[in-house]
Amino acid sequence: MTRKCVGPSEVIPFPAPAIPGRVRPKGYGNVRLNALKHGILSRHVVLPHEDSEEFSALLAALVAEHQPLGATEGHLVEEIAGVMWRKRRALLSEGAIINEGLKQSVRNPDRIISAGAPFERSLTGRGVDLRDLVNMTPVEVNEGRENARREMEGVRKALGILERNGTNPLERALHALGRESRDDWHARVQEGELESTADGLKKFIVDHLYVDCLLASKEAEQHAAIKAQVLGDGLHASSLESLCRYEVHLDRKLERCLAMLLKLKELRLADE
Image (spheres, rainbow, N blue to C red):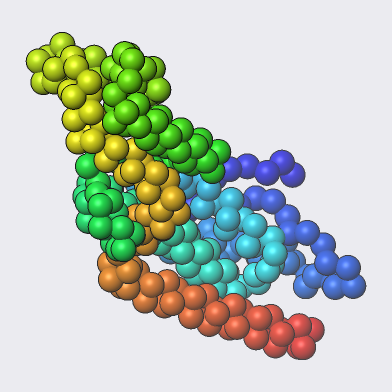
């Protein structure tokens, strides 16, 4: 017979698989699903926004596996399906709680970074988007570390040129810097924030570029620790405590139902 997806309160019309060496009781095919016809539990287990066909498939698989005979065995199989369905729902709830915690964590980069790298006093969350940082791949982390190293080399070279004050120190120092640093410098000059002189460039390097390069380098080095801090902080273990107790309750109920079902089937088969 062709398998059909049905609602949780309907009969599941496909035969259980045959088990080698086992003889089914007479009339088994007519009575094995009697306990599931009314679906007393199933009607209340599946919420309106949930997929009743998915639950029916789960129940059908359990019926095929355990081949319940009579109202009691059928009830226990339905109980087992309900417990498994609730465990799935509990996992969805757990994920939602963790996601909410992560959302709250990334909103405070200063707190997260200072906790993740507690011995880096100068490392702050200024200008850091923790969502981007957490999503960085190992390749991107290495690229960021290498870029920070090159930028720092350019900053030190430019400072050396300005300190020696040779021919055309401004142009030579600018040439030593990276493109982004030069663009930042020109933007600040155009806005009147800095003077287009060697002293103005030196002030820009000392007050801004050196600090930014240092922080970028430390951020790349501490990436793993900061990412772990974000994920750990987002767990909010206290919020999961009651959910964990609920999952333990479901596990125990599943164990009891399975034990009762297997005992009933053992007693029934012993009488045959």
